Length: 212
Image (cartoon, rainbow, N blue to C red; front, side):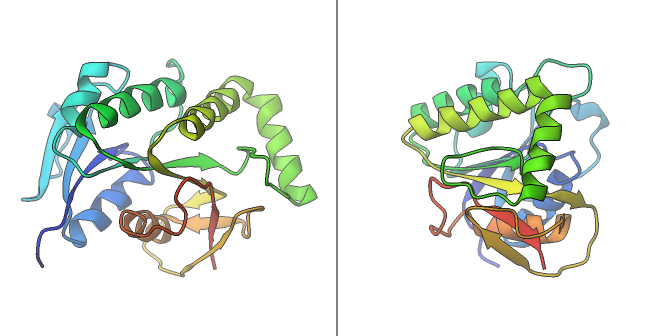
């Protein structure tokens, strides 16, 4: 397979990120993966380059994104650590601007609200529960979305239901106003995110994506 573009990946060690990394490599992309503890990371591949550091540091964002054509962020709140959604978005966008990179793909929960939403009562209840129990995390992700909206990059923020860690490939269903399913498999998610690098259907939008 001919090598494609180089993609910067955040969250490569996470529940979804491990599958996204594999999908990128399987599809011929070179990957620069940000790893906070590289001495403990055992994955290797000819197309994989490890970048040590923390995305909270602007210089780390620069080192990660330099030489890439797209950025995928599959990161979420870390237990007992400061929130990173909005700060990481600021650092990523600054580095993207410096190096002239336009494509940015990230993840969010179904609780993220945008003006065009028309959520079911069940999904509204789930969103309300998240806001009541994790108000700071929800607000930080909402702030990250607002930062993207004001930017000039070609972003896509993918909103997800419960993530099921499985190799099963079921296909996805997509909706711009409400989440169309209860779960998404990590394999389906990885396939969809990898496809978004070249797909221009959802530029500057936040689609809900679920497995069939």
